[in-house]
Length: 102
Image (tube, rainbow, N blue to C red; front, side, top):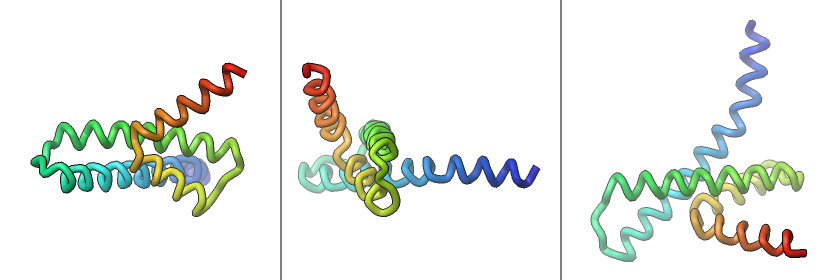
């Protein structure tokens, strides 16, 4: 039983790490945007940024895995993708569209 739990933790831990890094990037982006704009804090806006950041980080992590990028490099890519949020998703969409067109 303990071996099964260890195997599960080893499988899930990297994804939780990715989630923490990407959402942390989203929090930093949100706080920077607040500072730049002078807007007041809104939980709903933060929540939307965190959802977008975690999705961008998930995509970045999947791409890192498929490209064989691991460790600190992958962590940095995931965190920056989380910080970029929708911009990262847009850039990935652009690359994907170009690949499909030929």
